[in-house]
Length: 215
Image 1 (cartoon, rainbow, N blue to C red):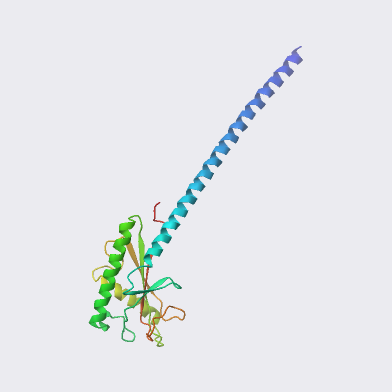
Image 2: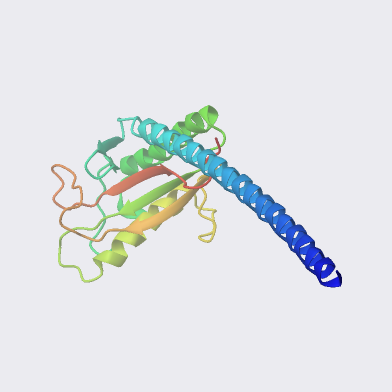
């Protein structure tokens, strides 16, 4: 009789243990499904946010192409604006004073045009920030330091626009627009200005900064 009681107790305990394990596994399964569902929902939200962000960036890029054609020529192949203003530096020089007064006055008008254009963009979408890239070019004249010279010319233009700014804080006025200075040297395949054999040009890019546009 005692043996039967022990066997009955064993199977009762075993049954209780298996029932407990079943409910534990069921709970874990339900929890896993809930977590998976939450991840799927979050992925869907992230995808929608990314698509909305990309759409907004594309809208801004399209708007950027409409900058005043008085001073800018948009090259769709390179997706850059070529500054129409013809500049003529002395060989090996990045001094803006090499340029005549009319050219300097036009360059100041270009700065004001960019500011007006950015003001309009920001008024339409206050959540966006921008990068303004000023890219200098140099002549094809076998000058050994053309790469550095083209950079120095772009920096010289920025300093001419904003003589009181420090180089460590390249900001376009107080707008949400950082400035990047670049130099292309003389490189085949770069967009070249018509009827300008010296190729002393500035290329301008205004692009939305990635990762800062909210839905």
